[in-house]
Image (cartoon, one colour):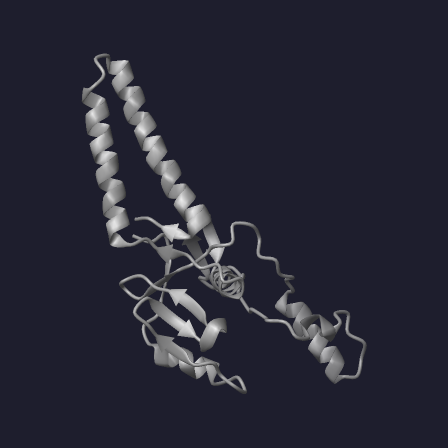
Length: 196
């Protein structure tokens, strides 16, 4: 089961979002996921069998500047009145802007793989950064999941019965599990594969 997924129910809705741009890239559902654009520059977004996208969570704080709504709204008021704003509007020029709520009672706090309580806008920033950097997580093929499970089971079964001493059995079984966990982490870190 993925640690968090962003469900793509209707690709037509995403196409409507792209229609806001002057020249929207085509959005196509493929056998392996979604394809945005055409040709060699097309962006491929891998999806799980259920049509979910694995979000490449940013563990560190997102590389974005944050401003309070009150500050931005006050700047707009000053600009409309012909005054000098405290926040230069050029800060937002040619930038992607994410708007999120952080006030108590907005119910925007979510449990995520990286925090017990995180703002929902972090999901959008993480997804955007993953798409922008073309750093998307891919679900591992089902055969790899099965192979990892069977190899771990077989190794633990053999090593827990082969050595004569109980301490050697425990040590070898623990070592086998450690090797499997390290292998899964390396596949995730360097291959972007999520092994269930």
